[in-house]
Image (cartoon, rainbow, N blue to C red; front, side, top):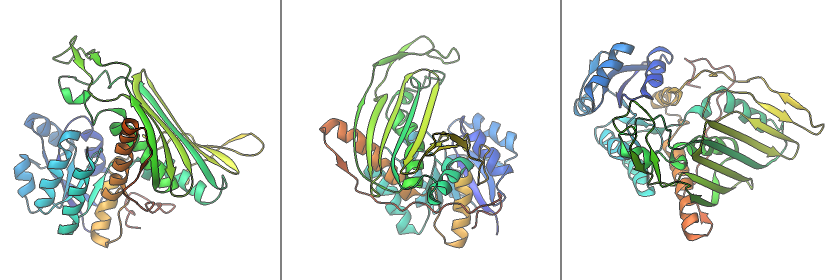
Length: 369
């Protein structure tokens, strides 16, 4: 298949791993331009990854050669830029969160459908060796019928190391529900299917934080925290599975946990924020057995979702890290917040099919399967 030409908007910290994989790992992708509101960042990335063009956002969107825009901007900018890219006739792949409201998510998807374009969204960690191996174990019946699941990630308050001269780091979009929960929710949907209704509570232990990053222009200042930094939810799946999810940025370090419970075993899954990690199964005898990976992509393969979408653009098959999947995640996320406010269960207004599992034995140039 021919290469699909990519333009990247947003050259901050996360762009490094995307650009490495999009330029060195996935043969179907050809990154031809980068843009950032800070041109020096774009120039730095272009030099680092041998990208031929540094341009403004407007120049990138106007370039007829570019087929896909990779949107790595801040959460508050995602919807507006995704709409601009679609209006310019480009397919879009965006970092999570997909949007900050149901209305914005629907605007993007409606425009994409009207123009016959594809929209994809992170996380694509679910396409890695860890979650794909868990998918095979569940589908092959190793834990019997799944009936429950539990996900948890506890970490430091609002990433204390982030350069907090941006107020947005302490607003909706960087909170644990929009920032970290998508990894767990996307993994749960990939393994267990769509969610039917949610209930939950959100809160926060602190209303302000002192900037501890000595490189920040606001080092030592106390800034307000404007989003809930702790959430606990119950998720009722269409399949009958009931799962719990707890996410917080009120603690310290990084503590992830992800488990699937079945009638014949318990699956201890790896961190959904990663592409790999130990996988263990506990069955009737109580012994824990470590399971080898059945699938590839155990390395940090961020960008695999874009490569998968590039093959889908050419073949017409559905892509896996899709906008529809991300829209369902947004529905769940906002449902948890709404449930906390109303003290009621919130039914989902969206439905999504489980994305197709990756076949066994794929290599980096075989994602067209």
